[in-house]
Image (cartoon, rainbow, N blue to C red; front, side, top):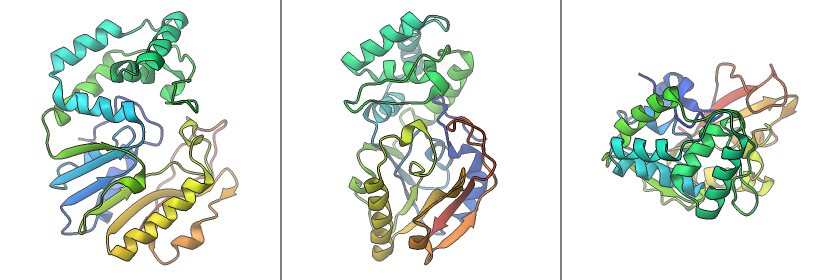
Length: 267
């Protein structure tokens, strides 16, 4: 069964796991998910590897996953329900956002992600959550998804969560690295803090992994909304596989039909 993230992350790879997994390298036991986001990848490949390192630069996201690993379900649900807000109260949302920005509670972060516009996590340059009210909240459907994630993660020492830049994670020889970075030529809100310099670092990082003989797979787009990925020439020496058409209407100002998503592997 494919798990769906309780965070409803845009661009989640849960729908593509069945297409990605046949492309995984053989005889690899350690996996590194360097842009883990809503967990659509790591949560659906736990049976395929002996150990998984899941990394993201968003501190409260990783702290929330660690809570799922350590806090019993009844206690976790009680804390969430105690802090949950009404679906139809903008004032409650703004108060929750203010409280999070002052205290940075992972529980408040999760509830903001459940309640904001399009469930799209967004921060200002100071790290404050600044997404607008979305007329939604933590509900029974989200609770069911969260329970499934908790069942997977609770006291599961196979998955290790770390927080930092993608190129700050210590990668051991013989590991398999999966990367699902922000797509530079798309319009996702999470892309706002992904710069051209970050994009350059990403491709330098791939070359470093390849030079060390570490196997990697990266998801990205070749074309989107009339724009072409200018870095495609740096991928010519690797193996590229096009993926089925993916809808990006949640992160775009309008529906587009010319998005071409791919995965690239160095093996």
